[in-house]
Length: 104
Image (cartoon, rainbow, N blue to C red; front, side, top):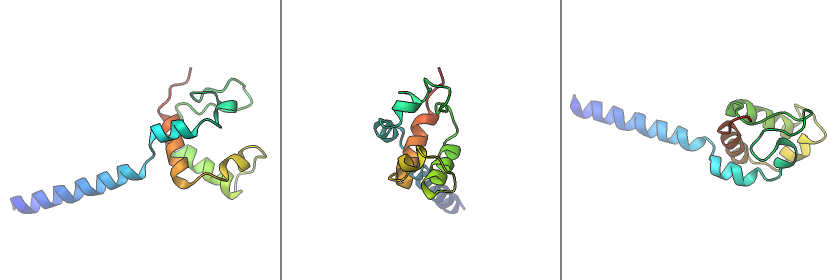
């Protein structure tokens, strides 16, 4: 019984660690965010009310929106071309970075 419990715990830990690795890397997102800063500010708080604040947004929401811009499902003449070269991992990383920031 103890070995079965240990094996189940090990399997659950593996599943959770794989899921965690699928999430974004905030440090990689920060280094990728240089282009975003012009409109959304250095930490995701936009200096202009025309552009949304990214700081503190939920990561899944940001990934969904970036994918929609990239696919053309959501149209914007600025964001479409910005999202176009991003990989799925880039999007996850950017979302991890901006979701970890606090709005100022």
